[in-house]
Length: 323
Image 1 (cartoon, rainbow, N blue to C red):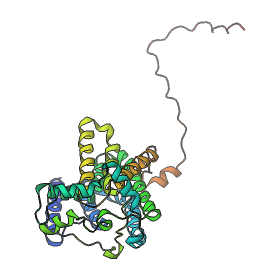
Image 2: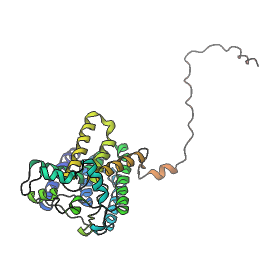
Image 3: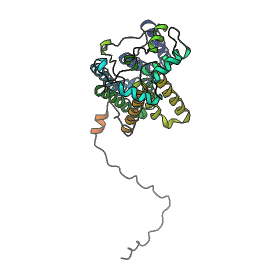
Image 4: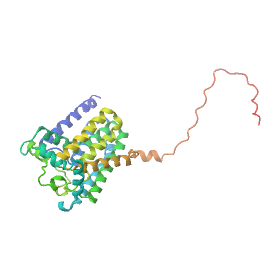
């Protein structure tokens, strides 16, 4: 018993120390294989007492990880020359929204100072970086605390991600920083100034990055997906996630990563995926599920009526009701 209690305390502490050392030595694990590995280790470290359920955890997460790895491979295959990708419709939409101005250009003209980073530049970098962690950390927390919600959350995230890939395939689109050479990518500027590096994926290389997969913006779609999914959680949660959704949209437009049209398409796709998967339930994986289903169901017998403590002399049988 003492050893088990010690493990419950030591395992999470060891995990936190190991993760911090990894980040310092090799960088942030933003690639999905690296991120999923650390999520699994974290869930295992915080559930040492339930180590027998680790196999079930791998089974429930394996479809999600497999589909997203497939998405990463296929995303790199969807590539055309930047000059052949769509951009005019997005600019037209943005000029309507911006009353004749492209919002990215207007924001950078008024807020960005070349060679001098402001506090809000660092803030948009921080918001932008949450894209790589938020959706999957939320999935891990749901798996740990609310398994039923996790099984509703998984098909939503997978459907939205694969729908975005299909759109990239059908409609390759340029981001602002490719369409307009005068547009600055602010996030890489901050990244270079901070000196933060990331751990490279073990299965992905830089040639798989698709620079014309801008429509829709998954950076914008994921926060809106979270807002819809957690809408019943209460007013405070709704306000917080709505603020996060708008902050991400601002970071993407001001940072030169996406047009407003990409943001709107991402929100629309998140809404469609939420509506489509609202009633979907993923199966509950159990190692003994097959054996339990194969066992014949036994008919239920009614429980015998309790014997009366007092007896009464027998009387005449009740007469049959008149017909």
